[in-house]
Amino acid sequence: MLYRLRHLTAYAYRNPVGFARCTLRLAPAAGEGQALLSHEMVVEPAPPTATERADFFGNRAVSLTVDTPHREFRIDARSRVRVERPPLPDPGTGPAWEEVRAQVLTWPGLGPDAPLHFAAPSRRVPLLPEITDYARASFPAGGGAYAGAFDLMRRIRADFAFDSEATEVGTPLAESFAGRRGVCQDFSHIMIAALRGLGLPAAYVSGYLRTLPPPGQPRLEGADASHAWVSVWCGEGWIGLDPTNGIGVQDDHIVVARGRDYADVAPVAGIIAGSGAQSLRVAVDVVPEDEKAGGPG
Image 1 (cartoon, helix red, strand yellow):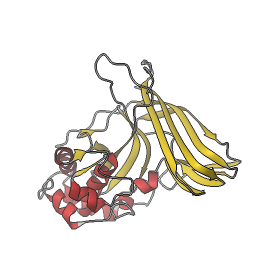
Image 2: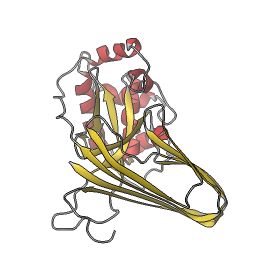
Image 3: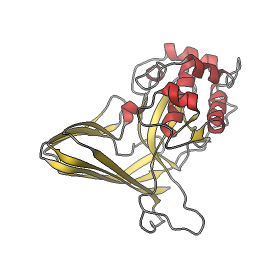
């Protein structure tokens, strides 16, 4: 599948901002079934300095500074990506979860994909006994790691309600778990905490998910959104699982970045020097190449 992506972020400030420094992770990843064909990003006001690098986990990050007074900060990122992933393995295959847990401590090397980096608690994903206990029902003794992770994903999909008003970006994990409500970020963090509580490595993945308009309706421009899911180490490689939708990751998912939790992969992160209220507008388009966007969004 060939996609055209657009991710527009616009901040508006009541009072002029004299200085801003931020790091952007908006370029889709290359590899693991994805090919990045093109990527361009326009920032207004234009920064006098910008540095591109690969972070520890291999994500493409751009750090920039704006030191001219401004009331609006706008980032317009556009990409073309080809996604062609092999079919997911059968959930009944693969080693037992106890075997996978034991492999983590003996895994050779500490490269970006090493399971050990994703087995310990992280800034946004502490290990909580109540979440570990919730996970145990999916992992009977001798059961497969992949089978257990797949069942856990399905349970989260059934037990938790999607509610964009229930949580914010900084809502603690314990609060979103207790309320059984939230968004894709919350559900991904919950699943990661559940797996790590049993000693199984799990990574947080940010990206996009292709969505379909209602039958007979045009696709609205800017109506899509960023998405998040989980990549689980099952002993024979990493497998993407989407607890928000209860599905495995295939060609409808487009990876941007991977890390230990949201803090590692935030699309826009930084600081500003200013005072007063601000507002944020985000518009995302995920459009297959052979499909045209519809009316105004």
